[in-house]
Length: 311
Image (tube, rainbow, N blue to C red; front, side, top):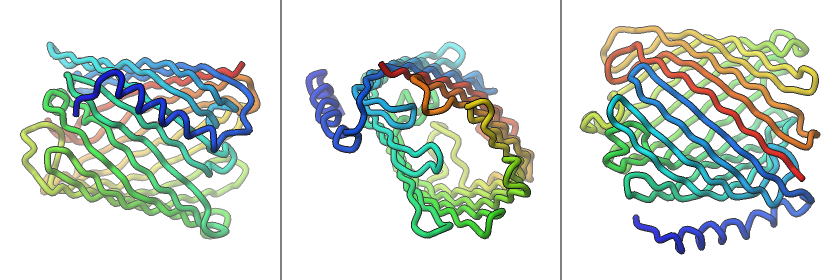
């Protein structure tokens, strides 16, 4: 798909004209910036640096605006850069996580343009039952896939069911379509137990699986016929001096097609300031160990920071 600069701006201005209907009570303008860095054991590095203009701003999870992001990818002697411009809208209740967010734009890399989409909607449907719908469309981020312009569209839904005050069950089903003709079916179940409602501590167990329609994708991305993983995790969530801190750590076992079971690991941490401040700051970081092209010991690390300020 080829887009002229005039068409890109017309597309984004059309989108930007719609969100104020949903955020008419906002009285402030804002600006923001975000950065993202990742690296893995296959020497693939990703860097994203972006800036935002927010004509409607209340807090970090209630905003409407436009974002420009510059991407850099590197692996050994190979490198690639890309640019993305998008319209974003968030309207999420920080206490319940109910609400919706959507970012739609155009991402150009290697002389190719892709309409991108990242959105979710979460709402209660009964006293202890919540449902969430999600969709994501973007490039597949490997050197081979970027060179060949392979993208994916992933959508699905999850349902969260509380069983009393201490137990929650979560189930997810998703479908992922690739532009090279491949597709995947995804499934996930998670059990969450909170022993004390005041500590913010949870004990979790989860299982996830996906199956691929095509095994041979010419090495464009990791694509086993079937992938299974079971994991035990400890989670923690607590408000400290107006800041919300979250952490999850887990160990598990994975099975790639007919290979033997092998270990997996996960660590995720995040911190975010309160929504009553005139600015918003969200910091995230993570580490994972799982399988990839060259065996079961693939390691991935990332850090991300997002800052916004109203005036």
